[in-house]
Length: 414
Image (cartoon, rainbow, N blue to C red):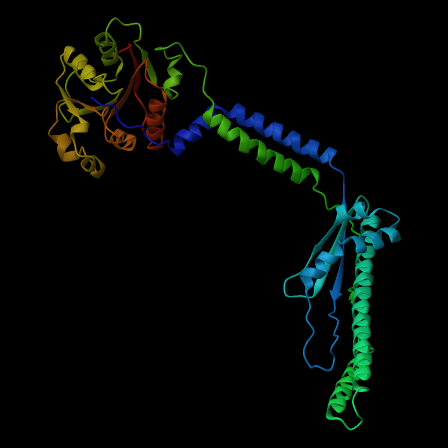
């Protein structure tokens, strides 16, 4: 008979694994919290102050009627440029490199405002640094605008001088001379406009407030972050950690099969044959000495595939002189079991019998758990060379359904 395909891990099984290995989780949590506290002790306390600057575009063509363009993203890059940081560093008596490590710039969406933040070890240093960088930015930007306007003026006057020299080569009444002088006059008007251009780069929107609380993380958030990180590492470790491997073919203890508190455990691994183990199991089960007259007694046996666990228990009960019916659940349609088999009508046909329902070959552990809710007793059987994970999964599913395992049987080696 082929082995049933492995079943996916159930949530109840995962929860049970984590409960059994709570020490791993506790260790991960403690180590994580300690790391968080250590980070709080070692990391420096910092303060952050912010200065808001409104950036104004420079209009070099006031008579054109068009709105001047403003590239806030480029201006944000200018804040951390060498010219700005060098100018601010001179005011603060520090280095441009030290300023660069503490400066950050943000642009609120749909605004012409730059928020210039500076982080330092003291509140006053943070406020002074933020203000100095903002003022240096405006100074450098204003100087750049003034230089641009001056260069335009010089280029315009040079063009006018060139045109006037060219006009002198034509007769006074020549149309070409008149056209050149007209162009020179237009450029003269342009030069006059450039002389009136406002090169104001913008303004500071209020002085930066001295920060009253650190911007660095405190012990509580760092401790919580460490706790979360510790559990994040500990959970997969707990789920994948393998218990100490027992001797090949030997289950270290009945607990390896996931037996629950109060469940009886029959360790028949030293018996000469499985028949001896099942004879003891038939005696240990709380069954009537004679066949019941008012209905059947049903037992669900879920064992290792290939061990014929249901047949073994049925034969042991027959040896005690009891009327026993053996039913192989794998011969039934799974949909029939899911709909409620065995029904009360079906059980009525079993009156006066002990009915052993063998679910060992069922491919679904969920169906095994469903059957467990419809019988009087549940027997969980595993041979010593089988992995106990499958048994723990079935027991977890039965526990979720409120079903107790009456007996766990450890069979001899196959």
